[in-house]
Length: 139
Picture 1 (cartoon, one colour):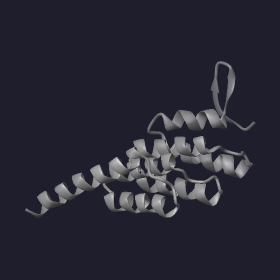
Picture 2 (picture 1 turned 90 degrees about the vertical axis):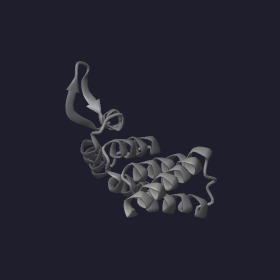
Picture 3 (picture 1 turned 60 degrees about the horizontal axis):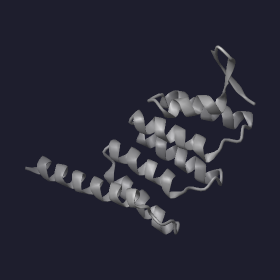
Picture 4 (picture 1 turned 120 degrees about the vertical axis):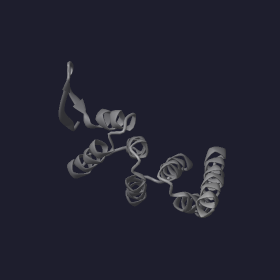
């Protein structure tokens, strides 16, 4: 088990636990660093670890990094599912990237994944908000 330098009272904190802790915060740069360490060390990270990193990136306003992590999941053949794509859509929305959010929603459909209600609602709510904001900015 790979451990990192940070220590708790019990000893070294496993990499997987550290990644999940970063996912609960805005520590996106630490989460990405831990991902790199894990990959370089040959640690088999589960999709839930990647999702924790996407969450940290989303919370930190780093939609580009969130999409990059999703791309890494795809390339690692971990498989993207509706939940992971929904997290990417949310990260794009928070970054004001509604076109990318819609593109990701389209990719869900192309991959023959059935978008869940939250992904579809998320995408349509984002478009409404973005289009109303762009109409205001033209006036």
